[in-house]
Length: 118
Image 1 (spheres, rainbow, N blue to C red):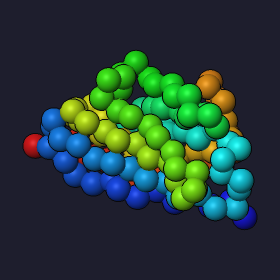
Image 2 (image 1 turned 90 degrees about the vertical axis):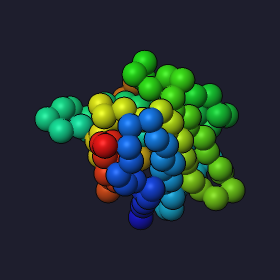
Image 3 (image 1 turned 30 degrees about the vertical axis):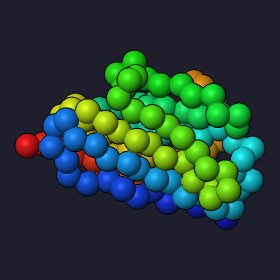
Image 4 (image 1 turned 180 degrees about the vertical axis):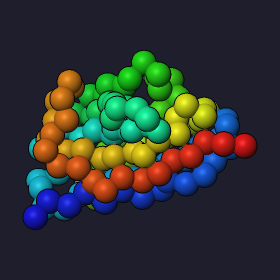
């Protein structure tokens, strides 16, 4: 049974930072591309960042230079370091496994809420 469990969300002021974590189980983690997606209020779910098996990264234009995705294969965990947060980053952030650079895979976490507000 595949499980993706996100953590690290919360309330942060504009300009602040958060680090999200996603712990995976039930898959051979090192063989899968991992991704972070988000869904803001009244918006469709969108890609934030992906990281391939070899560590190649890909980012949405809206987060380039502010967010960093990374992975630790020994811990079966993918991270999203978010800096210089803006109000428009407010969303539920979801971890995803098994997708590609364009489309998400079949496995999703439950999501973690990130709220950027003063």
